[in-house]
Each structure stands twice: as structure tokens, then as C-alpha cells.
Image 1 (cartoon, rainbow, N blue to C red):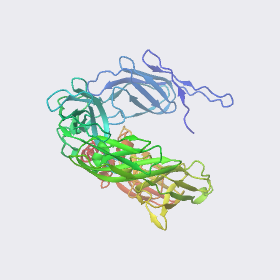
Image 2: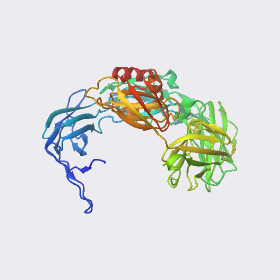
Image 3: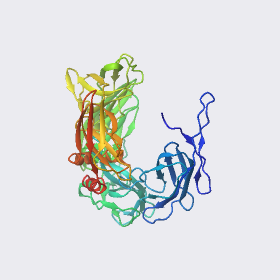
Image 4: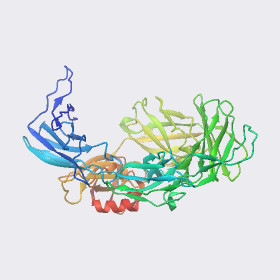
Length: 552
């Protein structure tokens, strides 16, 4: 039975939260849960020890309450029944959910009847700021440039740079990225300005290129890509200055052409560099005339690109792509033909006692594994009552397949007459038929902690040795005995950590790979049970592994 949930009024004096029940339906009266225990304390800055006002403090247990701290950082929860509780704190002025080691950790505590816990101290780790100037080749300030803090992430589909903070330069060319969680960052500046070049009189036509300089994106310090860039280390509360950029102009050209055999609406044209990192950071959309299919992309710097177009009409998807080499002069106009996306059809069957489960709410979702096909909307389709489905907009490439709303796990997939992995299979320009079998016989795993647990919350995690790279199962640990979970059958790695942000950490595929030699493995049989004793990975070891994984 789920614990009762309560509405909480916030009192101005001492930010005291009282327990009051939700409005109850007359036919389902519930007994109010109150007691004589209480918890109170303060929220403090972890660096300065100054009180943090207007922080939200969440209490979860037999009752769920929220309080807001006053000017002295004080909070209090009163009239609590005896039991186990967890407290967590959040403030908009502090980074939340992005820092892997320094976000607020939940505090677990046990309250006896009439126990009065006081002087609870909840620290919040402040973020860092990065600031500097952006100037052009003559040393003049460049306003309206976007500056971004980035870190590499690998969620199981490849290593990509993700944005974790940004700013825009002002009229003086100054910028400031605030509230960055502790970590090491690549800092990139992008200035979309173009500078007209001196030229003689040009007769204006629809295809004329007016000579202009543009500015290539730049990583600190003066690097074209993250491989040769310097990382900036942001410590809690630090104000890092002098991260300056001097942008260099380069001659850009216009790439133009026409989408051939296109439907008359929903056409999108994108130009992206061939290298994976550049593709994520410098993809550009085209200016398009939907009535003629003509497009142009100005200020394109020399390099190797892929030009891709997608369109949709009457439920059918269309695609086309071509490689483009851009040099010092504009390439000839490009004709980009579109072809109808192949039809991906199939059927789903469920094994076991749930074989007659209705399919009304089940959806088939295709997740791209290649950056070039991430530029199109994610294909998905409803499953019909007989278990069949049809996807009309799947571009050729590598994909993962997921089912949403099905009571089980993907056990096997057949593509035509051969078995394929549901987590990495390839489609081509021809129609494909898939046969998906859903298993319903989960394995039961008893997880025990090797050694005694301290006062901090301990969580274990299981992830597959092979299989769905995005699957992970968190387990709340207790030192007195095993915690039991159900997982799809297979072999798993298992470890325990003293951190509340475990699910965030384990989305990092590089960190998971680094942990493989430190964790236990367990074989979870279909419909059976297994037992595993997991080691506790110390926080210092976890920090070192994160540094090696380029995520800290």
C-alpha cells in the first residue's frame, strides 16, 4: 500500500510544515496520520557555511511534506508519526541534478514516538561561474555570441558533447556562465555574424554570392575541436575569469540546390559535418522555399558535409542524403532526390500467462544509433489489437527498438528469417518485417551488501553484461538483509555506492565500463532466482573513475 500523501501549508515563522490530510472522498474516509515527533534544522552553503534562505526541503516517509527555509536557513517539520524518513533539499540558486558528486544527498533518519530531532544540517554545494571576453580579429567586442559549457556523455548510443550551461555576450563582448556544477568543461563560443567583403558592383540575381566573412565556432583556447581544446575546471563557488576568445574570420560560401520529387509540405533540409562531434555541434538548417523545393545555406566554411532532407505527407515519410565537399568557391547547385522511407512492419507476441494481454496501449519506438538519423523525428507506431504494427518513416541506418506499455521485456527479434539484436540492428532502403517476442518470466535477484553500511544511504545497481545498453535497475540497500528485485533474465554486473545520484552516474556508459572489473556478476535465470553479494565502491574510487571517464 502506498503511503498517504498530505498537502502542506507553509508557515512564515521558522518555515514550519504542519500535517493536514488531502481532501477526502466521503465514501473513502482515511485516518489522519499525525504524531508528536519533529525534525528541524538548517540549510547551509557547503563552502561558506552561510544560511540558504528560500530553499525547499522535502520530507518523505509515512507523510510527504515540504517546507521553505526562512532568512536564517531554518526549517521544521512537526506532528510527525514515528517511522523512517528521507529529507532532501533544493534551491534554484544551486545546481541541481547535473553535478555527479556534489548535488544534495538525501538524509535518511528514523524517528521514535515523540522524538525531537534538532540541529539537522543540510549542505548545498554552490556552482561555479566562468566569464571572459569575446573579440574579433581587430580586438573589437563581439556581442550576441553564444558561449557554452560542455561535457562528454555516453548514454549507450555513442559519445557526444552535451551542453550543461550557456551565456550570451553583451555589447562589450563580455559573458558569464553561472551555476555550473563541479566538474571539468569544454567552453565553446559561437558567433553567427558575417562581415561583408569589399567587392566591385555585382549584378544581383537569385543565385549570386555576395562575398562575406563568417566566424567558425571556437573552443577555449583557440581550438577548432575538443580534441585540441583546453578544459576548464570548475570548483564549487569558484569565479573563473579570463576565459577569452579572439574569433578568426574565414571565407564562407553558400550551398544551394533543390529537393527533387518532394511532397509539397513538411520539408526539412539539414547540412551537418561528417565528423561525429562536429555533426552534433554544427548542424545547420536550410532556408527553404516549400513551393519549389529550392534551398540555400549561407556562410558554410570549407569541409566535408552530409546534406540530408526529410519530408512527410499523408502519413508517409521521405528521405534523401548526399555527401558534399565545400571548398573556397561555392559548389554547383545540388539536386537532392527524395525516396519514400521503407515500410517497417511486424508483429508482437507475448509469452506466458500474459499472452492474451490487450495491445491497445502498446507503442513501438525506434531509437537511432547514428547521429545522421537523429535529425529526423523519432519513428513510433501504435500496435493494433492483433499485435501488428507499421512504421512508415524509418530512414536506413542502425536502430534500437523499444516497446512502451507492454507487460514484459523484449526477448527476441527476427528481421525477415534471421535473428537480430533489438539494441542494434540495421535497416536498408527496402521494406522490413520484424517479429518481436515479449517475455514475461522475470528473474528474482536477492542483493546483499558486502560489509556493514554506514549512516549514509546505500544504493546498488544492476546492469546487463550484454543486452539493452540503457537498462539499469537501482536497489535501495539495507544492512540487515537482502533486497529483492525482478529483472529480465540474463547476466548482470552488480555494485553498491554511497550516492543519491546513482541513476545519473550510471547513464554514463564509459563509467559502467570502468566499473566492470570492480563489480560482481550474477546470472539471473528465466523464471528463477539468484543471489549476489555486492561490493561497496568508495566515494574516492568513484571520483577517480569519473575523472578517467572524462565526466567529472
